[in-house]
Figure: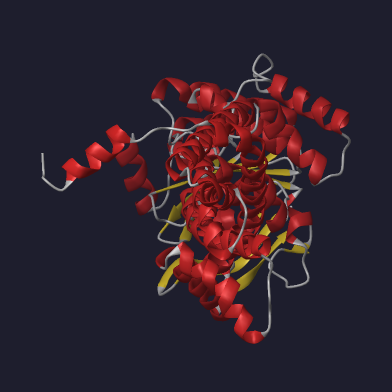
Length: 231
Length: 240
């Protein structure tokens, strides 16, 4: 065993767990968990809509649209999510645009989700053969009817699992909200922990709650997929 | 009537159709044969406006297909088209595959659309598959589904683009039987095909395409049994 770990182990062995403060704070933690879930879900809905638009712009738009979509996607995917939150928090503050902590996280997460989902959608669109679209047009459908009725439902099946991953990702990185003063699960946990000095217990409890949220999301997404994609 | 006048079509520098003239009367069945790349399939795509043409004119029931003022969505309701790759919509049940367009394009009610779809599916022998998904069916069944889907729009014309070429040999027969059925119904059809005996037995006339021109056209029996042009003779002796 490396010598640096030995004192740490002793510390843990000597540590006396005090769970009562955690139990007392549990209702507050669960309320905060609901806020986490709410902001993640909302950011997914917004992200799906914007991501779809970005994917279509990047695939079929003119130069200006392609450029706009590319800048968004590149920035969202290739910079740390934390810096994106800071941009919407403190960056916009420089232009006298002050968002509440809730809005910073919602906007930041939506921005991030849209970028990642756009690339998933783009791959999905490219995987649907153009002959599907042509067959629909031959039946007299307009191009938007063919797109909405024939192409997009098939794209959704292809991107469903990446979308599930993105939802999990949204829940987990919403914890960065505590660094912009947002009292979601991680923020609330930090607040409670520093009030009671039971850091280890509180963050362990938060981790368990995050884990359960993710498992529930995976289950719900699985059940939805069973209903939606019965082919 | 479908009428092509001096139609030219290029893909870049490659000229695929070179001044094609053709008339197909109401009620007629025309088979189009010829080597791959001779322009047969491209001609079909030009007839319903999937592909643009560089010069010449195509008229369907007197409507100029490639005039800027033509509403292609409206025109295509009268022209059914079935492809080599049947293109069934995998996310829709067999019933929904057929009922969707009558509903959203023709504005039929849900019940009317289902009734039309059911009638056509029974007609092509898929009456027991209404609630199945296409991915669980054979290629031949999916191709018959594609035919029923086109027929549900109650088209005046049907274009068939090598509809048996991607099928396993034992499935070709059921699709050709469906085409024979349509012929008995009096449907006007242009059938691009490699099935020479089908072309001879089922169509009124046969056109032989060679390098973007109609090299020879005539009564089915006569053209297949007694071709006049050298290229036609060569092609037919090669495929036999």
